[in-house]
Length: 255
Image 1 (tube, rainbow, N blue to C red):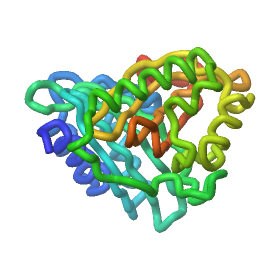
Image 2: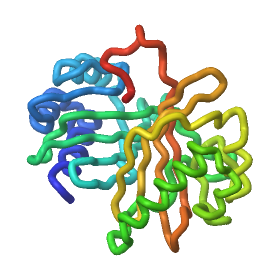
Image 3: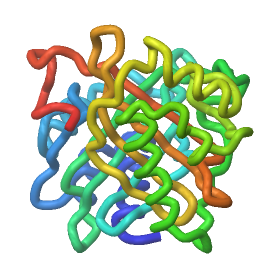
Image 4: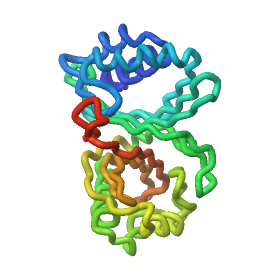
C-alpha cells in the first residue's frame, strides 16, 4: 500500500469513523486541500466545519472501506456507512489526488443511499474487492476508455458486446442483470447522455471513471467502477449524485 492510499484509509477510519477529524485532516492533507464534495468547504477548516458536527450528530458510525486502489498520485476508495445503527446507510465513492509524500491535496466524491438489492438482484457494494495486481492495468484502462468513448459518449450501444461480458455482474442499483440489462438501461431516458469523462484511473483489473451524465433535465456526477478479465468488463458498480444549483455549492463544484 502506497503512502497516499494509506493516508486516505487513515483520514476515513481515524478522522471520520474514529471521530478524530481535526487530528486526521492536519496529519494527512498537504499544503492545500481542494474540495469537490459540494457540501464541504475547501481546506482543513472546511473539512472540520462539516465533519465535527457530523461526528456529534452521528455518535454511532460503522464505516467500512470495501475496496480501494491507487494509480500514481491518484487514489480511489469505495466505502459503506451505517450511521446510528442503520438509521441512515450510505455508499460513497471517493477520488483523491496526493502529493509526492502521499498527503491529500484534492478530493472528489459521490454519495448515494445504500441499496441492498438493485434491479439485477445484486447488492450495491458486494462483489470482488481485492485488486488482481497480476492483471495488465494499462490494458484494463484501454478497454474501459474505449467503452466509455464508443458506447457511452458516442452512444454506440450496439458495440457494448465488444467490451462487456454477456454475464457481467451488475451492482449498479438501477441496471438489470447481464449485458441485456445494461443495454436496456443505456438506451433509456434514465441513463440519458454521458456528457463528460473527467478522469480515468486504475490498477490491475480495476478501472474507475469519473464523469458527468445528463438525464431527465438533471446533471449527474457519476463514478463507474469496472473489473476487467479476459479482455472484457465482467463486473460493474456505479455511484451517482445529482449536481445541485451553483448557489448550493460550498466550493468550486463537483469537477
